[in-house]
Image 1 (cartoon, rainbow, N blue to C red):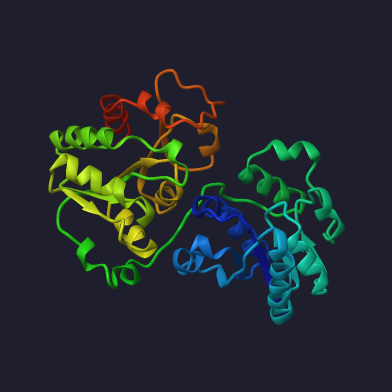
Image 2 (spheres, rainbow, N blue to C red):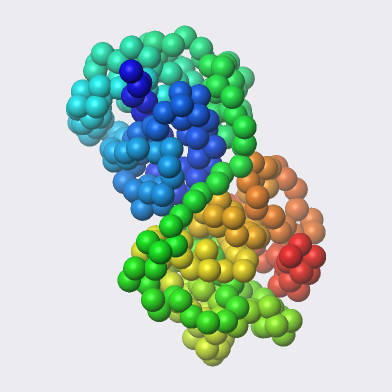
Length: 329
């Protein structure tokens, strides 16, 4: 009889979920079974992971603090009660999924065992205290290793059905050479400046590397895309700020290469198999070592930097960015 497997990941950022794709696949392969996911709605996992053959069902649940803490625990318990999972894997250090799984009577609860989470985990293979200095990817790698789960590939890989993406997005299906600029980020200090994107576009156009540029950003940062279009006066920019995530994925997948700030779409682009360049000045590029992103950094860059000031992005010069792109195409 097939076992029912669930994997829980509680982070809300799209990029963080993308990083976990190799470990989700490894757990599925280990059990030779499709898996269910429980993630936050904000990740839009039902849209981006729909075409992955090893994922069966995706549930949304929130993981809030304060008065909503126990509401979310019991909502998750209700999912567990309904699905009757044999295994629940928690790829995170929070307590809520472990508590919900224990209350639901699930026998095999696997997680990193951070602090109070140990009280609720039933499989007693914990990460060491020193492991909390590892990044999220390395923590998941260690969790799989101590539970004898083989990891064949550490790099995120995302398959999508292009025909599904095209529905309602015919305006993105234009002839000519396309590239994409990722012009926003969840954190403003990671954003390159609009005038620098404009200058880079001029330089790339002189080299004949594109006919059109998709400007990828969320609706809350639509002013960034509009400023680039208005200040440049060029007709080759395509504003994607009004597109949902399906449209964004299509734009990226249609692109010869992607250049952008450190953000969810940057990680998405690399996972989609598009040549991807990350503009990094204020956070460590070592965080990207398990991705296919080519980082572009200032000349005086230090890998251990965490500068939460957008001014640091001015150290990235458009002509230097151009050279890095050309040398890596």
